[in-house]
Length: 219
Image (cartoon, rainbow, N blue to C red; front, side):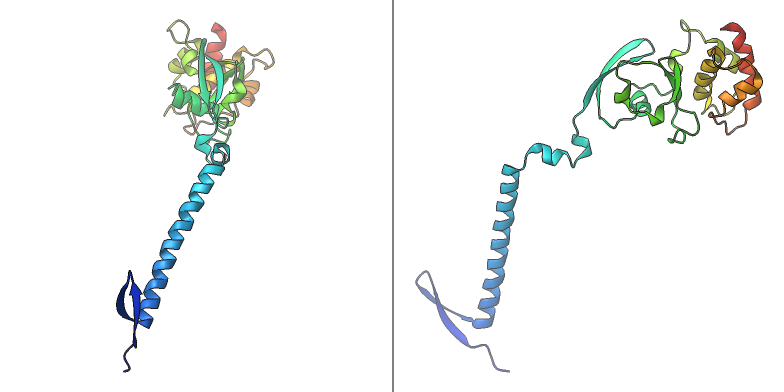
């Protein structure tokens, strides 16, 4: 095989010999590598200098500006900053450590997350915290009266109106609203209909109705 023809070239005044193919390939790769790094570095520097922080933050959910709100939870004003997309249920459980309200289906279909907002029952998994700035919120932790079980809590206990207990806090919050409401007739049929959004996988519906009938006599 024919060997590469050696050709002289100068570097810093000294004469060197190298194969044409080897020299051109090596120098080409070096040049491309150095140029690429330089271009990339200059591009990053230019973007860092010119791109406003807001343009970067809008693509990062964690960098979204938090909103200052005040929630009156169980009679106590709680000031906090939350993400605009923070769900009320998650704020209560994760930020305020009020874990009595449960996350079930997370689609507003089971009632495990039910609580009172300004005297009405809502699915807290479907509501954003920022929507309730200044609202009066009652969770299962606030249903008791002066440290004692409320009429509904006591009736649920005495009538075995639960089994696993996961849905019980939501059942109690809805039941408390139903038996106090002037818009819902005090009849088993009306109460069953009003409670239909609260699912009990254990099937304690009969005992829940008995508990409501007992509690209604003491509210």
